[in-house]
Length: 597
Image (tube, rainbow, N blue to C red):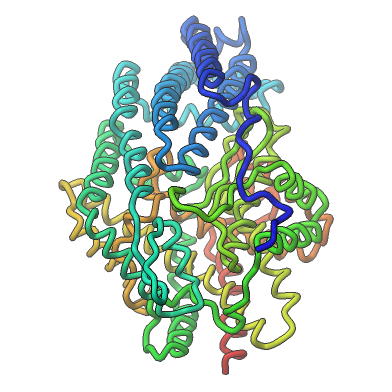
């Protein structure tokens, strides 16, 4: 293959003022720890917000917190990138332990500030948050006051934070190391190739059904050998989390996740209720596609199989060029930003072993940069994954002008930004399709995303919810986890999927994220919300880009319900809102059925 104009290996060398070597990073960390200690000493001087406001000023403290958050995020993202590009990197493990202590220390300082907010009498509280200088912080202050009500006494919170470092968060690190070391032996014609979990996972969309099937079973067999160990990891993460919830008297296992997503329970319930009402068209699609392979039910290893133009290969260079062209059609800011991403070496896409499984985008707020991670294998799925992660990066870029403390947007809106970028590219590909075969191929790719968000993500939500309920009673063995996974698939797919990956609870990294519980429903939320945004963009043309960026900038400083009401004028607690998006996807099913007949 000829040399590409775009590098497939990212540049991590310019992320810190004094370089990214071990000694430079060590100095950076030491300085950051000193800043956290200074902030803590400053906060320790006060008992309530009135005292702070009369001396240093609440705004000054919030800005200090925001600056430290940016620097700490910079360090955390750097280590995430080191671990992902080489799962055997032991230096990254050491650095992770160091920053884990800083994260815990900073969290305890934030908790101290939340205690101060909580101790402020209602009369003074109302006066302070209405101060004009604090207008941009009103949401975060109110949110912290609510979170403060859930805090344990300060010494107990600090103890839990300390235990998290070598317990709770360490299990996540252990998971990353373990999954990265697993090798899968997969037969290719006359040879057997040893692949990582991520590489085996990419074979889901291979044009050869025999290879897809062999990869599916080889992955399951390899994971079965380690399932007891992964079950222990998952149980310990869940057990720790549940014990914390119990001590804090959290009313429901979803409470923390809803707060992190700035969502009301009624919004989530309305979304899932609507999704459940519209399962039939998508089961019809799966059944119809299964017939192409001589099956009565969709075999899971055939779900991602391309149809129509299935042999088409898209080089990395072609993918980048097409993404840039598509983004430029949407708006100049998005197009120029994406061009800078590739020119600056912000993307890691090389196909090699010892890389992490899942793609992601890491934010570096201190330098106003991002890094995109994936494994590119010349298929349309990889093109869309690349666009998806670039959407996250554009969101980070939009937040550059926002004060540090308000940059922490929820996952639900983060996934909206990524799906929006993905939709721009997918729509552009569909527009260029000329033949019936091309249209069928691309429409199928579009419907896969609907099925993933309405059925697969729903199965993850059901599995995690049911697992946590059983974990309350004790350890849940691997065999039972497989059963729970099967039950979740049967319900979410309405019985339309055969031979699902019962050990997907192992290779799905989201279950092991200790900082974001229930990282599943934000995908469905973001996908459906994207359809509303995208419909509006089609009406407004390039003028919509300005409004879209304004929405992204607001995403960390108001509830998601208020955000959508402000920028779309829609009530997301109503099922009628969610129906609008799903009906667009139902129309895709109708078009697919029409073409295939």
